[in-house]
View 1 (cartoon, rainbow, N blue to C red):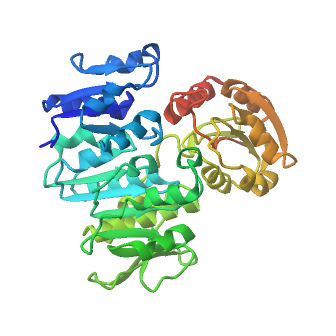
View 2 (view 1 turned 30 degrees about the vertical axis):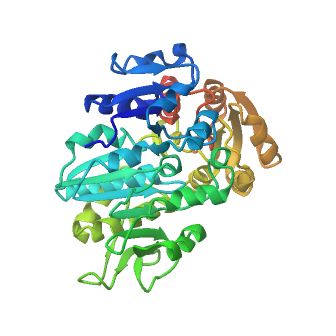
Length: 450
């Protein structure tokens, strides 16, 4: 039962529409406010129940008349309407907080981190489905959690991908199992600094208690430091250390070792051979295994499911091979660290396409790998000038401006054995609707090449 009779919603994107339609169906008096002009959101308005009140082109004080404001992810907390709301002590929450408060599933699992969230969330969803659980995968992946509220019951395992944008607007959110994969600089244009970014991520375990679990990456310094702040049971994963307690991968033995004294049996191992390449996917698998083991799924089931897992769309996705040249769609790469991971996945002969909307983080950490593995760097989007400055002198750099021009150039210059890697390292919102749109355009252009 929703505890409010009235609510205003900021944002007319996917989350805002799902929220508004759901709350209206529960007889809540809903008002939606969108900063963009009506012409820019006409397609979204078509999805909104025609009886719901709304405004476009800016947030007016009408927002303040509803007792509760639900903020869509990514809207800054310091915009004027929210500052006025705080002065009036109006409650401001996010969709995850609202939706999680309306469900009572068998298990609620939440996954966050700078990189790897979508792959790990998908992996975890697959292990629960394979083990026979009624499973819902939602959040920052696919559809908002609010869309599934009426379908979730006491037999459902809910697997959520949650972003820092979503977590910053939570108050009582309490997953049974939380996962923080890694923390590196990202979204600093929104959070202002790393301290705020880390603090938003920590909200994933803030309300957990001794009956819950928090899985942390021992190999990541920021994650390791979070363990001291957890009130829940901490489980570490690693592929660099042979942990006395935790879940780790032994590269020499090519085995996963599980050492958790509170489980029976408390010490066992099994070989793991993933279809999807890269050390980062071993990291993702360790979190998946840890979550599965803590949920009572057998090691044999976990091993079988993970070894059949083929990856997710837009993440190091092989689109096509033309005359010995591989075209890789990594549009999911929306930050520098993600591009770093992508470059490590190929030994060399890379034609790299980068660029998009700048997120306030330097590209200099890529210099070494670009210099040793990239034969040409093709730049697109509004960040292209900044990237060229940060990576000057590392390789041949060409300002392609658009994705179509970049792929035309790549196709003309690539030779057998080369890899054309589209790993933008930036958000997509300068030229595309989202990373899915960007990745789909890449695939469309590649599939049109002769």
